[in-house]
Length: 402
Image 1 (cartoon, rainbow, N blue to C red):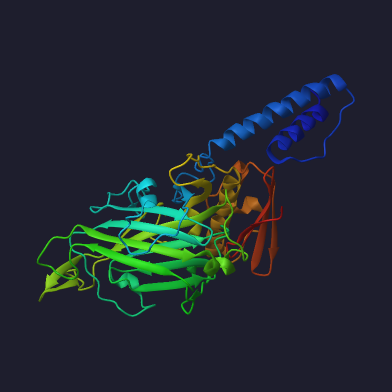
Image 2 (tube, rainbow, N blue to C red; image 1 turned 180 degrees about the vertical axis):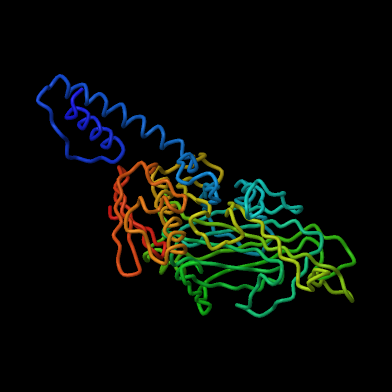
């Protein structure tokens, strides 16, 4: 086969992956017809590959590089026909009909020991609120922080993280302890990209309640656990979601976390256990719904997916939609990881993708055409796919151009 015809085949293969519209034509229409068959075959293979939605089947790193795997959990959020009374008791029929999430796991993933106490969540929505219910198994329920917007995770707590548009910037965090003391805040960017946290943010119209199945701050007995019930107004989240409420079919990036400290009882009070050698407090346990891969909740790209259904709870079951575009976004995220590693080693960002191979990245395995636009201490990566044109920059923001 001539070089000309080989070039034509390569371009058709790229079409199958990226929907390039400029074709190299040959003069032999019989061969061209055959190449169209190759094009459709490759396109179908590409789509089947993508529909598996296994985010880790793309080998983008050398085996010796320890990059956390992407294994997000998903949940279909059904509608509720009447408002939920937020009292922590979860006794509405809607809560009885909707399923629990999977039990929480170690924040690092399923390869680590399962938590000794179970935690699970239910989620509902209506036109005004996102409703969250959590059940936390706990033999010794205790909490001491009473000041709003204090650092609540210094107590055992339950935490909610929400990024409606999935760009990993401008997201919401809510923490609550067994005294129903809350800390609500916004993050302009993850801490790895400079933050900052906006602690002055107050969730207008927020409703929270805690119900304790047992006693509080009483070491003399054994408790069953505690329940958290939350109603977050969509209007309060408007500024982090382009001033709009969720639509049916939307998928928000959401995660839930539980902080659990090692404690002992001293003079009738729960006190954090200290290391006998260093005298420092033992590190807390972090249990989450969707694994983060590392001990860091501020990686919004690894949070779970919550899909808003049009079906009311108890009616028709809705299947979760594995959106193919999420694989494209995960490829971009890995380029961002690679650029951060490259910058740490060389003090500048890579101008060409092949430079990233020096830190263990495998750019030739990226199944889409890409472009790096490097600026002064910054960069933007562009990828064109059948799912649109997508970008990521040096501070980790990801967006689409249609």
